[in-house]
Amino acid sequence: MPPGGGGPMKDCEYSQISTHSSSPMESPHKKKKIAARRKWEVFPGRNKFFCNGRIMMARQTGVFYLTLVLILVTSGLFFAFDCPYLAVKITPAIPVVGGILFFFVMGTLLRTSFSDPGVLPRATPDEAADLERQIDIANGTSSGGYRPPPRTKEVIINGQTVKLKYCFTCKIFRPPRASHCSLCDNCVERFDHHCPWVGNCVGKRNYRFFYMFILSLSFLTVFIFAFVITHVILRSQQTGFLNALKDSPASVLEAVVCFFSVWSIVGLSGFHTYLISSNQTTNEDIKGSWSNKRGKENYNPYSYGNIFTNCCVALCGPISPSLIDRRGYVQPDTPQPAAPSNGMAAYGATQSQSDMCDQDQCIQSTKFVLQAAATPLLQSEPSLTSDELHLPGKPGLGTPCASLTLGQPTPPSSMPNLTAEAALTDILPLKDEHVGHQFLTPEEAPSPPRMLAGSPLAHSRTMHVLGLASQDSLHEDSVRGLVKLSSV
Image (cartoon, rainbow, N blue to C red; front, side):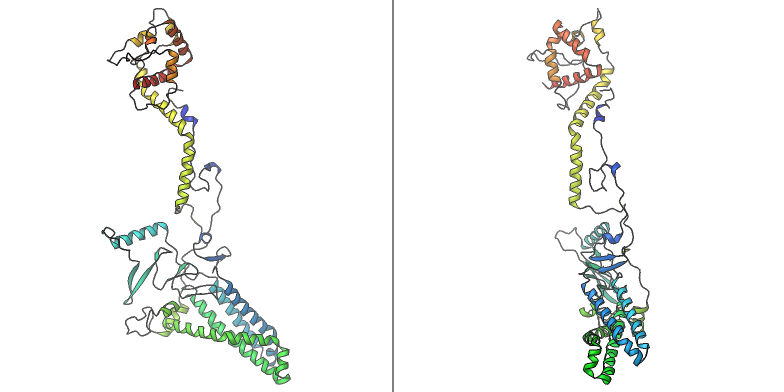
């Protein structure tokens, strides 16, 4: 081993563990470039996205497809079987007006179904932890007894006290008029209701399109139903009622669909017209949150007191931008919350990797410490080499060992006689024993009795050992032997 002690330490190399890779043992030089992911791909709510996040819908879209089929089939039959006859007998404006209503209905339906209704972003782990600390501080956690923290806040809006409820899913205090949709699993700003017919929630950002959809659908349904009846009456005047039904069987299907749907659609349009005029939501109206009379205690703080103003605000006001930025990219340097299972797996993998070198490191570190402790003392004293031992007039091996000064303890008389071979066999196994003992230099240490006698056998064997071992290894083995002897 070199004097610096750096040789054995290079036998066990360390490799940096990548915390961002899928496998903790993966080398950093073998990283693969991960494509940037958009936020809609990791969106926590129960929604479906299409066209790279441009289209956002709820997962339950079966009723939405039924709505599309009813509108497309009914309108298609009307344009195919009724409009040609009506355009000739009455006026060509009938198919034109019907086409305008149809495209307006489809446009508002798709706009309502494919847009963000006003989803509120969930709190990040840091924001949620900070909010929990604020709740604990406000609740006074230093008190002796435990009391559940309050989960509501109160704000004043136009002189009316409004409670802000805490959402345990999104980890936020919901703004006024917001609510959590159980189907989409999102908090929606100015939540009205979840409409399965459009396949989406109805909230602040798509309410006006929903209202225009049901209003235009009411006009289209009434329009188709009225002119289908007109078509049947005109044909029955010429060929009779039964022959008119045989000549245009599609008119019967259209009349049945429109008859059973017009009542619900027109009634729904009237209900939402009332809500818009009073600046309420379906959720607030069902719960009975506010009274229409201004003088009562629970008056509506969001109403402007004028029907025309309320309608203009709901239908003509600016549309707020989306808060979730679903097409934005996920920042790779954003700290992600680590699950406990992942953390334990990473720790286990790291520890298993480090355990591969534990034994070698322990041995090499012990050798390095022993040599570092003994080297300064050894360098100040002259050392004996194999050449000096053969020169005449030089003292033998027993002479330096016999000159024990500084009042060091001598070996006990009960110590058994040790030869050079026995001493070496006792020295070699000492790699990680008795690290905490005080170290002695070879000049200060007591030697075995047989080696002090200077016998030819001991001298020859010692010369053979010194010829095989280098000076540094002799120092190292001597220190180990001293530790063993001192412990005995």
